[in-house]
Amino acid sequence: MAETPYLVALALIDQGGARALPLAGRSLKAEEASADQPTQAAHGLALELLLRVWQRSDDGVLKRACGDESLLLVELAMERLPEDLPALKAAWLNSGDREAFCTGLRAMCGRAWTMSIAKFQPVTLTPWKV
Image (tube, rainbow, N blue to C red; front, side, top):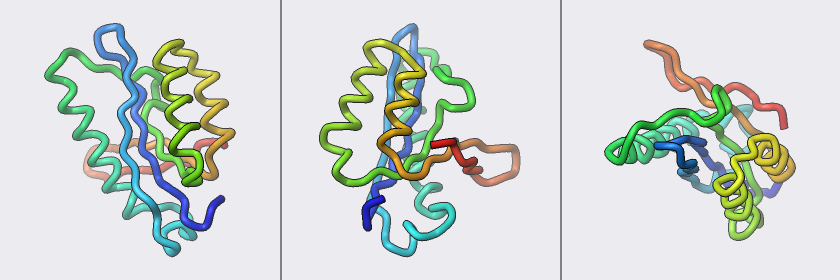
């Protein structure tokens, strides 16, 4: 993984039969990148992402497109951001091929987690097999 990876939160959602993939991201400081989990950064990105998703609810009913793997947090090398991630996003939006999306994302990221939350608990990051 690059010395200063980029942390990206992704939401794979369906809205009225159309796929959407809002995302939020930020670069990680060295100490965050070396931690087991980028908890502080992850919580901020989860909040930002879910606020974006919430705003979309004005346009219709939302649902998770990929079950428990609909909210993801991934570490990417900065080089992946300008071309690889947008191409992968566009492919998923056009095809809806979950397996191809997961395979492509796993190939480009270093570490990855699914995000979830339980009542009265903070955001939980569960390692996603990369």
